[in-house]
Amino acid sequence: MSRPRISLATALGTLLLVLAACGVPARTEAEGATTLRLALNQSEDHPSFVALENLAERVSARTQGRWNIDVYPNENLGAQQEALQLTSDGSIDLAVVSGPQLENLNEDFVVFNLPNVFDSIEHQMEVITDPAVVGELYSSLQDRNLTVLGGFTQGARNVYSVHGPVTTPADLAGQKIRVQESAVHAEMLDLMGGSATPMAYGEVYTALQSGVLDGAENNEVSYVTQKHYEVAGDYSRTEHLIGIDYLVANTGRMGRMSPADRAAFDQEWAAAIAEFTALWRSATEEATAEARSQGVRFHEVDRGAFRAALAPLTERALTTERAREVYAKTRAAAP
Ligand code: GCU
Image (cartoon, rainbow, N blue to C red; front, side, top):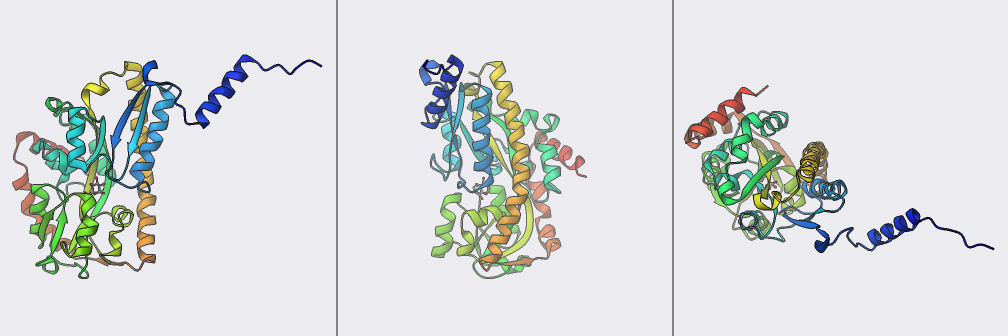
């Protein structure tokens, strides 16, 4: 009886499957594969992590394993300020950072961090993917070896407090509210009636719990994935701004991709942005439902009063010609 014959293609296919199952990469560093390290401050159940993991998979497949991305969640590579510095140094390759972090490197980025600058997520996404608006801005950090690749929405940010609802600016009197590390956001929160306390994301839970903070402001997804609802159960829909998270890359490292691999990366990144925006909507609904089931109280607020209190900020924050130009284009694109 003759032995069953296995074709070379089948044998190779099986070997690749076995290697993949063992977690052995298709290519090693010596064979020209590169693994990019990406810093993220969110947990694994946040839609950024999900969209970036999917991006990593597609980029590996499209470049036949020449380019791989390892996503490190939970500030494992450092909080955003540090991760940005490490990306600039080339110690790591990619980082997701919130808008205010870039405002600290180039004040023109302030435009997209302002309250009431975007009317909706659709408006925001249209602006931040339009090269005629953001082209120069995204390449303005080359002296730091940083390139901004684009961004994910953070949705609307709202105030939450350990002391009950915040429905008017007067409710925030005397309350220490955490803001991101940005002078403009500190001023924003003060104008909203509270006392701004800038702090890194990962420190907020403990600070709320220990009484160092009275509250914070963030979207529903962060409020739930960071478990802040456990210590601050009143969530007030101030919707004072729609935030943005940027994916920032080390320019030198990205420059090592062949044009074809870079084109594949760019296509997959554009797909990741679209995937993220779709995920965002369901994640927000799920987070809201989860918070309700945990006993969180949601409150409608006097949005007009907050808007009026914040009105002077825009004029004061737009200090450069470029920022004023980007602001004008952004508002012109409003529906
Ligand atoms: C959101 C945003 C993060 C940011 C965080 C914060 O979760 O997606 O990038 O760091 O807010 O308030 O610090």
